[in-house]
Every structure is written in structure tokens, then in C-alpha cells.
Image 1 (cartoon, helix red, strand yellow):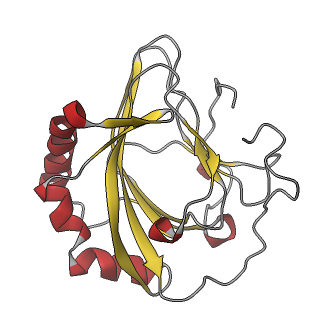
Image 2: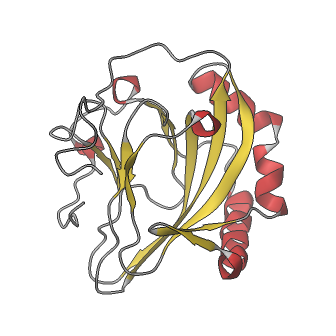
Length: 205
């Protein structure tokens, strides 16, 4: 997946919503300044023990994040904005802070049928190149989201192919988020999201 130099947030041109597989994007009331700061600090503390898997590092949750993912408030938020679901119990901190950090295009399993991402940090010096890509209608019409720290996105990660573009290759960009998985109670209605018919192609792999 080629580095994206001119990353343009799709929200500039249209309302990103269920047609794109996205149920919510913004700053919810439950993400208070105190909770956000605590998650930022915990993610920093957990970085030392993070494990590299493919092109990114994954860190275990600490007590702050564990309390959040088990809270009734968070589950109510997910259900209110998407479909009946329950927390899968699977969540982690994700770090993009070494050369070529990225996420290749993929779909998730039932543990992340619904994926709630909280952007915790995104720092850069020369350019900000790492952002979320969704491919609800294929690689020729991606939905690009450049989330700011404090923003939350809830999307259909089981049916919509998604990826994260690589960080800057000059070593001056760092991003951290937390991914929290929810499992829908029933299969989500088929919205005709694009999937390749002959394996990954057109740069998807």
C-alpha cells in the first residue's frame, strides 16, 4: 500500500455514515477530559511491553481501559448508535511509531464485528500521513478518515475492508489508538459492501 502524501478527510466532501459502514464519528460525552488523559497515560505506560505483529505494535490494556470496555455506558453507546451487540472482551492499544507502521487492508472476525477506535495521540513534524481507510465500495472510492486525538469512530469492521496508511517514512510521525471489539447479537444486514471476487487485488493484500 503506497504512502499517502495528500491525505484528504472524506468528511470534507460528504457526510460519512452507515452507507460507508460508519455508525458514529466524533467526541462522545463519556470520553471526558479525565478519562482521555488517563487512557493516554496508560497507553504510554503499556508501550514498553507491546508486541509487534506484522506492521504495528499491540499493547495490553491496563485497569483504566479494562474498566471502560466493561462499562454499561460504553455498551449502551454502541447499541444506541449501531445494532444490538455485546463487548467481545477483546481490545488493545495500537502503536504506529516505527518505520512502515501501518495496517494492510483486511476485515476483522466476530470479536471486532463492530470496532470502536479511540484516537489517543497523533504527532508529526513535517506531515501527517497515517489515517484510516475504508473501502465500502472498492479501492477506487475509498473513504479516508484522519482522526484527531479525542475522536472516536464506530464502524462495521467485519464486512467493510479497512486499513491504515503508513506513517511518514522520515521518522517524525507517531500515532496511538485503542481498538475495542463488540460482537453483534445477530448478523448485520447485508449492505452490499465491496469484497474482491478473486482474492486481494488492485493493491490490496
